[in-house]
Image (cartoon, rainbow, N blue to C red; front, side, top):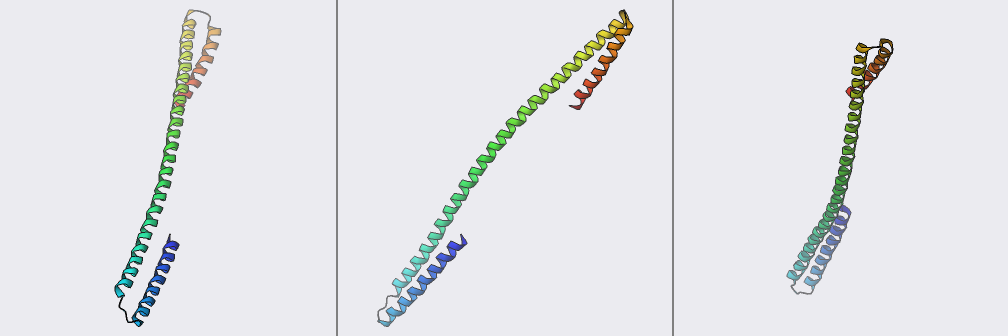
Length: 146
């Protein structure tokens, strides 16, 4: 952008120098046409300013389009990540429910085995009871960790 402006400024400066040279040649001919030369130089300056404005507006439009494309891309990424997050939360809650269900099943088994201890054969039931209590404790640790 600066290179373009510098080139345009250089060309405009050359045009102003040329117009002053024309002015000097016109003075030598004894005809007074200063207003035309000044009008031409002012027109060139105005043209230069308009050209700079047009170039800057076009560049700003291009930058805005790029920024809008980046914003749209980022919004799509955010949407994708939110979907993944929702899926992961769903999986996590399902896994937690499964662990709780298994824990409750072990809890039920332990209570039924404790009832059987009171009713009858203690040696077999006590071994099963201890195994189920160990499994229940392990499952409780899993549930508490989640």
